[in-house]
Image 1 (cartoon, rainbow, N blue to C red):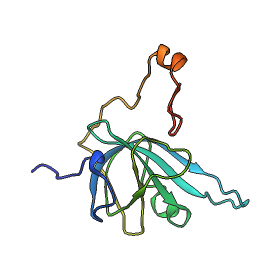
Image 2 (image 1 turned 180 degrees about the vertical axis):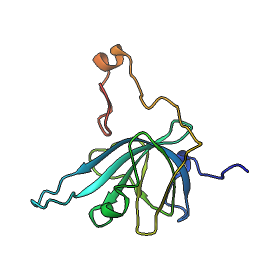
Image 3 (image 1 turned 45 degrees about the vertical axis):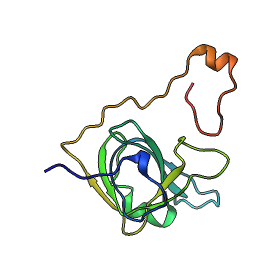
Image 4 (image 1 turned 180 degrees about the horizontal axis):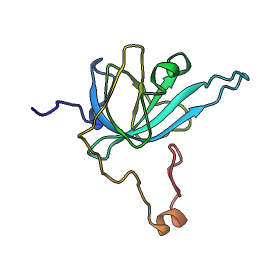
Length: 141
């Protein structure tokens, strides 16, 4: 039986129950700016089998719950998470929304699923030199 999951391109704030299968492209801890030894948050860039990418965040109070469950480069089924608009001055991806893990979020390692799409979005050299790049989200050079 095929697993019924949502495409990341469909993720928005219209409903509360989403179920995605994604590859963790990047995973990093953000340090606390208050001098605490505990990290401020755990941040991720996720990609689905269609190559769509979305930013995800785990706040300080939940890092302990998920930190040892998630590894960069692995594929997971993630369920029961919050979705909000991707705001702020700098975006990690161009997706209009972002994922926020919650206490009841579920993360399950997918051993038989591989997501092999290209995680990079390249620009031609002429576009880099002669066009104003869109700096509203991170780009790789």
